Image (cartoon, rainbow, N blue to C red; front, top):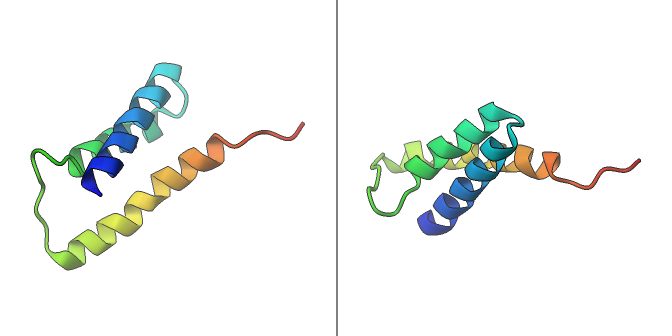
Amino acid sequence: MRLVVCGAAAYLAYSILQRGAARWLGWAFVALAILYNPVFKVHFERETWVLINLASAFPFGIAGWMGRPRRD
């Protein structure tokens, strides 16, 4: 799971920061990529990870909402 989340966060961070749109969201994905990286694991208690996992869904939801097709 770490590999998938880290990879998706890194890709989205690069994509968003390259476009220059919603830079705060790009940096949020940089933080998520660092937090979920599978090589240098960050250790927290289980309860803390539950909160982090829930909070991590927010940037992915925002990115999905921003990337949806527009109805004109």
